[in-house]
Amino acid sequence: MRLVEVATQHGACVIPFGGGTNVTEALRIPLSEERLVIAVDMRQMNRILWVDPVNRMACIEAGATGRHLMEELAKFGFTMGHEPDSLEFSTLGGWIATNASGMKKNRYGNIEDLVLDMQVVTPQGIVERPRQAPRESVGVNPRQYMFGSEGNFGIVTTAVVKLFPLPEVQRYGSVIFPDLETGLSFLYALQQSGAVPASVRVMDNTQFHFGQALKPAKHGLAAKVKSELEKAVVTKLKGFDPYKLAVATLVFEGSREEVAFQEKTVYRIASEHGGMKGGGANGERGYQLTFGIAYIRDLTFEHWAIAESFETSVPWSRAMDLYERVQRRVEKEHAALGLPGKVFFTGRFTQVYQTGVVIYFYLGFYARGVSDPVGAYAALEHAAREEILAAGGSLSHHHGVGKIRRDFLPEVYSEAALTLNRKVKAAIDPDNVFGASNCGINGPVALTPDEEAH
View 1: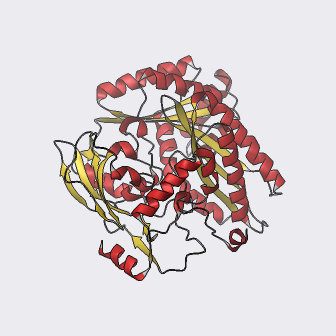
View 2 (view 1 turned 90 degrees about the vertical axis):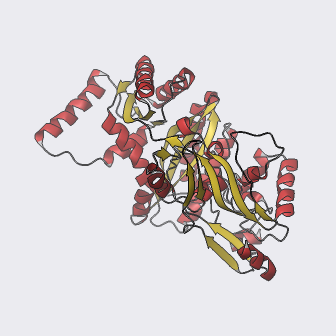
View 3 (view 1 turned 45 degrees about the horizontal axis):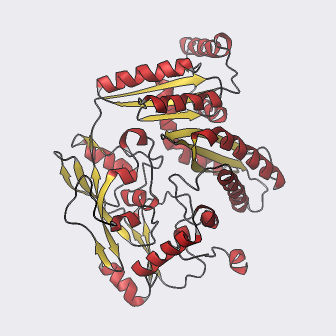
C-alpha cells in the first residue's frame, strides 16, 4: 500500500508485472505516458500463507507461478487444477487479471470458479474481506472488478482459492478421427453425455502433423515395424486420409470409478463417430506439447519465422464455420500483404461448455525479407479477429483484451457499457496511477508514433 501512496504523491505510474506471458501487448506503455513508470514485479510474493485441508481452501500470494503452486500444493495432497499453457511462468495474480482458463477447466473450472476471495491494493485503499463463504448474496462484490481488470484498478496481492484432492488416477488417451468436422461432432456428443474428462482437445490436421514432426526418431527394427503397422491400420484398414484426419488428446483424472466411467463413455462415443483409439502415449505427448510451444516459437524466430496464438469461444452451431472462415481470411490476407511462402495456420477445439466450444489458433509466416514482420503479423491477426467476430465468436476466451484488441470493444459492448467501465476506473483510480490503459479503459491510446499521428 505504501508503494501506491508514494506513487500517488509523486505522480508516478504503477504497472503490475506477473510472469510476462500475456500475448495482448498488455505491458506496453502508451506513447503519451510521461510519468516515471514503476514496474512492480510480483514474483517474489509467491508463498502459500495457509492451507485449510478440511474446507479445502488455501491463501496464496499473487506472484506464485503455476508450476510452483502445483508443486507446493501437492505436498499437502491437493491441487488447484488450473493448468494454462503458460503454467510454468504465469502467476495467480495474472490469471485473475486476465480472467484466465486452463486446459483442465472441464473438471476444475475457470479462474472465476476457483477464486473465493482476494486482497487488492488500490488507490482507494486495501480491498479485502475478513472471511470466506462457499457462496454469498451480498450486493456487488468489489472483487468482481478484478477479474479481467488487466492492471487497471490495482494490484492483487493474495487470493483464497479452492483446492481439490490430488486425483487417485490420471490417465492419458487419444482418438483419431477421419476429419476435423467429425472430431467436433464427437466433442458435442461428449459434452451432452456428462462424462467429459479433465481435458479433451481436438487438433486439426496441420497441428497433428506438427506434433508428428516433433516426435523422437524411431530407433531399432521393432519400433520402426510398429510405427509402419500403426500407419497401415490408420490409412489402409480404416481408410483415413493422412492429410485430413484429426486427433483428440484426452486427460482423465479422478477416482478409479470416475475415470473408468469416463473412458468407457468417451471411447464409445468416439467409436460411434468413426474414431479409433490412438493410445495413451500419443495423448500424453499431445498434451505436453502445449507447454513446449512457446519455446518452439522462440526457436523459429532464429529461422525467420514469426508466429503467435489467439483464441475465441463460439456457439456449437457456428464453430466449424468460424474455423473455416478464419482460415480462408488469413490465407487471403497473407497473399494481399505479399508475404513469402504459405501462411502457417492451425487450430484445435479445446475447452467445452454446454453452449459452445473454445477454438485456439496458431498463426505464423516466413518473415525473411519482410520489412516489418511484427506489423505484418499484427495485420494478419487483426483480420482474423474481424472474421471471428463476424462469424459469431467472442473477442477473447481467456487471453484478454490488452491493447491489441481494444479497437474491437465497441463491437462487443454498448457505448453505455464502455462508459460505465470508464467511470468505475475514474472512481477507483482518479489519478490513473495504474496507467496500463488496457481494455480501452482510458479510451484510445497510441503505442507508436504512427498511431499518434492518426
